Amino acid sequence: MSIHARQAESHLYQLRLLLEELCCDLCRFEHVVRNDCHPENVQIDREFPLGAPGIFADIRVAPEGQQPYFVEVKYGYSNDMLQRRLQQKYGPGTPGSASGSKVVLVLDVDNRSSWTSLAAELARCLRPGLELEIWDEQRLFALTRERFRTDFEAITTENLLNVREAIDRAKGFYAFQGRSFEEYEHDPLKADLLWHFGFWRLRQLRERGRLTPRDTLPPGAYRGVAVLLADLCSFSSYVRDTSDSEIIREGLTSFYSKARYQIINNGGMLYQFVGDQVVGFFGIPETNPGYVSKAFATAQALLCIGQSVSNHWQRRIDRVQTSCGLHIGMAVGDMQVVSLRPFDRLHTGAIGDCINVAARLMSAASENEIVVSNSFYRKLPEETEEDFRELEPIEARNVSRIKAWKLRPHCEP
Image (cartoon, rainbow, N blue to C red; front, side, top):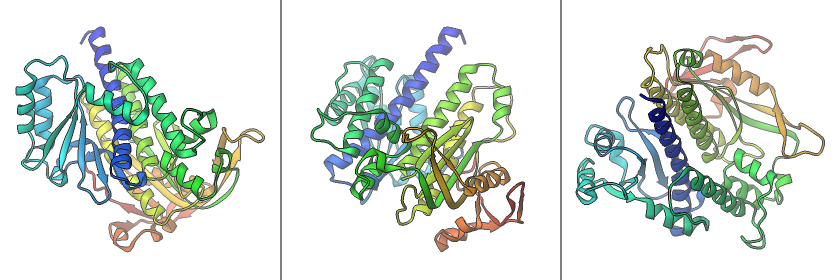
């Protein structure tokens, strides 16, 4: 492949990632506005397993009380590839698609010839009972105008970056409110909080008495925080065997984007990325009922994201990797949030033994495994506990021996 062709392919890949983020936000706001649904009751998963090895839906949307549906972002795909992918994902061979009501296909239609006949062919690729809904360029333009008060006439990187800024402003107004949308000021602290938390979670905290952004996560002690650490397996090996640095950046950007969304979508806090590792907290700054179960469900979803990212990366390199996906450690305990400079809410850090314990447990997990501390395990529902097996105590330097439990994943290669 020529350098020019490789750059064009990379551009399309990044563009599709950005469109996936846009579609997740559009779907959530559509259900909030049209169906009077609380945003936290719209479950959105990226890289949802469809029941066949290595087959994942781009996005699955499950509004409370309604049948789930799927979203496929296939901007820039050839007609033949479109048909193959839809047949592979939503034909009779993928049992996981049977629960869905429709497939929303996000597609560049304007430059495709014989579109009417192609649309009919695409609909025939789906199993009976799945409706095909097309979101073309004009549909995306109309939705973003209606939901986020922005306007653009072409899908380009520059336009979509502007749309992202408009969406963040709309989320900020929803979360923090103000006298009017026109007067709302989206300052750096609000933008930073929206990076770490879901917009609906910030609104929930404000309605519970954390009235200003500075009240959201003040320095101090927080009890019973659930910690999730997830790390890409064999990352150094993937990097060593990848001659094209663009592929490395693609893989990491995909992982970062999807992992962050999964954490904040489930009510958690994205703490940070460290190399190929993501750190998330649940139950901070205050707990909701079932927050430990939410943390665990997030870990399970992250296993599928890790599998999908690794599969995509493996398809682009010659040497077969010995392992793929993620390994995850989880613990629960107390932590301190600390300002990194006096009176600063924008730059903060977190320390706590539970973070160290989760890191040791992550090291004890093999590919596509979750290892949790005993205290975390005891907070899970009984039906979930049955899926675990107890490990021999884990020797952890500077922490002592840890009683732990291991889950075999539901998302296998």
